[in-house]
Image (cartoon, rainbow, N blue to C red):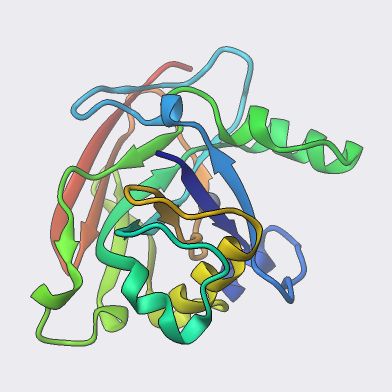
Length: 207
Ligand code: ZN
């Protein structure tokens, strides 16, 4: 299973980091070793001074697909969930300055929170894209959004990614984060909500 993460997919977040909006979706991978085990705390690695939370809607790939055309994308995903793309922002900034890849900042152990709960797309009365999600840090809402605000919507994300690499059943797409990313510290509690329902709770340990 691979994890494909989309970068710069919400205008508010692109702006807060001073980036430009990409014409084609920007993506990178996390290995399966990045997945944080359920109910395990997140330990801030000792080689970074600035880990940020990025709450993201997740999409599950349900069949193998290569060079999928956008209009056929809905056949390739069947469920959504919520997660966090933990990012060592200081390391990522250095990598960006040097033109280096982002893996050290994005693909480390524990950097992918994936909720245990997955919702089949046909389980919602309303259009799933209009569902809201948000992240609370120590009980305070810090990030919120919905798929309607995405710059590149899921159907075009699937078309774009599958142009370069085959999507396989069980792969997960992190669809990008809305504005409000911020630093986490030891003692923080992060709780993610989809459609006002709690999807995960993560305790942060470390500096
Ligand atoms: Zn992200």
